[in-house]
Amino acid sequence: MFKYMTARQAQKILIIEDEAAIQKILSEPLTYAGYKITTASDGLEGINIFHEQDFDLILLDIMLPKIDGYTVCEIIRQESQIPIILLTALDTEDAQIKGFDKLADDYITKPFSIKLVLKRVEAILRRTSSDTVSDSIRYKEITLSETERRVTLSGNEIALTHLEFEILLLLLKNKGRVFTRDDLFNLVWGYDFVGDEKGVNFHIMNLRRKLGVDYIETVRGVGYRIAKDN
Image (cartoon, rainbow, N blue to C red; front, top):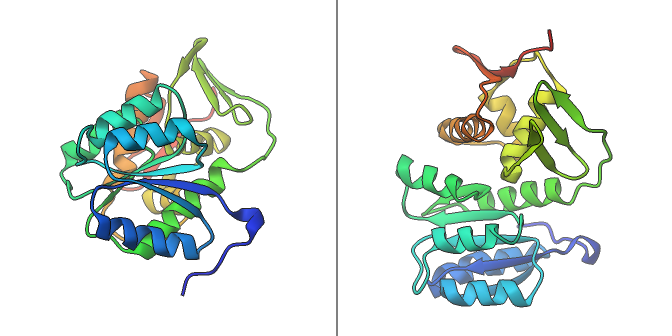
């Protein structure tokens, strides 16, 4: 069974999901694992609850009444960088790309394994609650502040999701090293991934698009790297 967390570790999660059965499937094991759970049954209710309380993470269904999950994600992103994991039966590439375009941090398709959900929640919260101190990293026009979790390109701030930030941070800290997709899953996602490689590919693609400079190199048949400074 899932390991219970101590009170010190307890963090608050908002589940925005219209199906009562799925709310229960998610909330019971997350509560048992030590998280404080609040639920909402439609997009409008979810936004209102988000404004009324502080949360550490949001599990967000896409196909919601009143306001769909994409719009909810977009509204929240205008105000907060809280981690958002999308939950949906839409498993097409276009649907996933749209979710990442709205700055969601992760994407889980239904039907899902609750153990996988717990691992992803744990991994994201572990990253976002880290208080590791580090100086800024500079690479050509890019400046990344780990303590402020801020990335600028030629002085202009770039809005990245938590996963995109962590991928860029890892590559910049290890310039010249090639990371396989499995490496990225284990070091950034923080869990053993079972499935295809689309998740990494989506995030790399979005990183390149947002930065507007192609400093992330593809090493054919191996993985990705950022070249050492000349």
